[in-house]
Length: 262
Ligand code: NDP
Image (tube, rainbow, N blue to C red; front, side):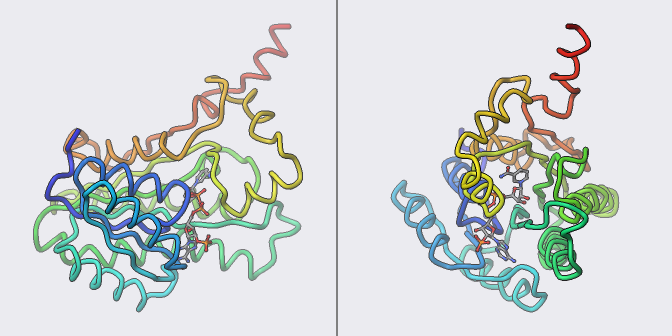
C-alpha cells in the first residue's frame, strides 16, 4: 500500500515500541517521518532503518511535556519535511501501579506526559493544519482508559485523552482536521512497566494471553496498522472515534464466562 505518498508525519515517542513501529509502517507506505523522542539515539536508529528502505525521515529530540520544546519540535519537523499532514501522539509513560503508591509527583508526571503533552502537541500543529484546511491526528490511548487494570493516574489521564480527542473532533472537524484514538491492550514492548514486570516474571506475556480472546497479547505492528488506517484517507469519515485494538480483552470477561459456564 502507498497511502502516505507525499504526506508528512510527526510521531512522538517514535524511537521505541509502538512509536517506532508506527514510524516504520507509515514510512513503508510513503510518508516522510519526523521521529521525535526524549532521547535522540533511538530516534536516530529508527531514521537509519527508514533511510535503508529509501524513504525520508528525520530524528528530533524533544521532551513533549515542555511547551516551548513542542513548539520548536513542530517548527523543526516542518523545516525538515514541509507542512505536517499527520500527528501521532504516542509518547507516554507510567510507573505508579496503585493508588497507595501514587505520590503527587507520580500524578503530575503521568498526567503531564499522557494528557498535557497531547494537548501541547495538538495545539502546536493546529495553526498550520487549520490554515491548510487539512490534517489528521491520531492519539494513542489505552484499555486503561476504559476499564481499571492498574496504574490509576495513567488510567485517569488516558480516559481524559478520550474526551480531549472528542473535543478536537467536534471543534476541528469542520476545519478539515480529523482526530481519533487507538486504544491498545497489552502490547509486547520494552517500556518501563513491561521491563519491570518481565524482570519479576519472564512468562508474564504468556500468562496474560489467557485473558485475550484471540489467545495472545499484541505487537507494536498491530497498533501501527490501526494508526495507519485512521491516519489514511480510508478513514476519511472517521472522526472522534476510539478504535480499541485489544484482541477482545475489554469486549467481556472471558475467564468469568468460563467460570460461570463451568
Ligand atoms: P515505550 O516506552 O516503548 O516508548 C515510548 C517512547 O516515548 C519512549 O522512547 C520514551 O522515552 C518516549 N517518551 C516518554 N516520555 C517522553 C517525553 N516526555 N517526551 C518525549 N518522548 C517521551 O512505550 P510503548 O511503545 O509501550 O507505548 C507507546 C504508547 O502506547 C503510549 O502512549 C502507551 O501509553 C501506549 N500503550 C502501550 C501499551 C503497551 O502494552 N505497551 C498498552 C496500551 C497503551 P523513554 O524510553 O526515554 O522514556
